[in-house]
Length: 436
Image (cartoon, rainbow, N blue to C red; front, side, top):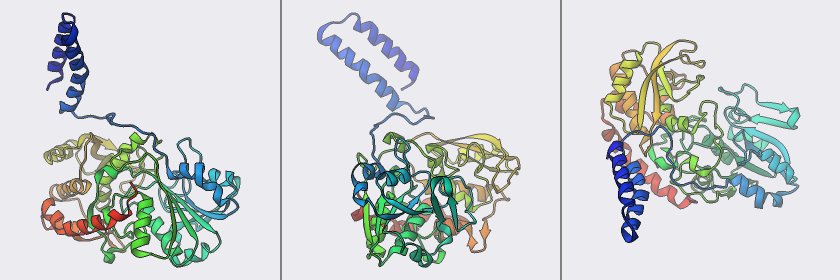
């Protein structure tokens, strides 16, 4: 139904309303209420903003902890696994919540990007002292589970509160796994304060981790690439399936359901890392992150990270024509130029595309596969990036099957069939650990 047609219908209804009474007038009033909803639902025009759907005030595990649970840990020595995202809806930090309840903070353990989300790269120091906050902060990526076990003998409780993205290659779930591995066999209470899953509406998908491609930061959590669990649920799953000797407490969310979009929670978007400044960029991340496995810039260090992507040798108009030919339903692309301030192509003018999420549910891996396959077929400059351990894409995916399927010319349905059993097995296993 065209907008112009609907406008004319509304005008006609108003005219008829002025000439009707009784039940006829009631019917016409009902039509005037319903028709705008019909217009909204029937239009095929893309939406460049998140449409209103259902808003509710979700309470995080931290807020539940502050209201009901923290007081019982009064006087306890604690280690906090936290960063800048560890705040309530009114920006009260876990550190302040703990101290106001007389919990003694021995130290803070920081994941990638540092305690304040200020770093694009891993910190070179094992620890830092923040005198203004009277804190010592240890950087988790310098520890193994064995070396961390010694450090964790000091506190009586560990409180974990970090905003995750529910993707295995996003490093915060690896931080959770590292803490659990270090606590295995001890009686130290691990308290996970749960947070929403911003990508929960996308479901479970992608290959299950192949341990041949284990990496301590991006390929360590034994799950599919998209595991569709909150960190509280992920802790329950991992402890019960792999580390049964853990004293685990999960403080759940309130008023939360799995299908909710993050903006509907009425919680502020705290960028979980420097290059996910908006919820829209976080949704794009689910598609574009695997392109870090090829020699394409993803706009890191620009005003639109994980929205811009390209390279110095790309013509933006040509790229957008190629992308349009893929007929991707949930995203639109416009030609852009940009200069990344973080590698690859740091400081160089890149031609590329600006990727816009326009709504709906999609399968991220399917779109990643299509775009990377297009790059490999259309651009001779595009290569698989490597590091000292091998192909970066294999590390990101936790398997070499994704790369090999693209190189052999397989379609995405053919590739998905190869990993379908892995997805179904994990999907069935994780069900008993879900909280929402």
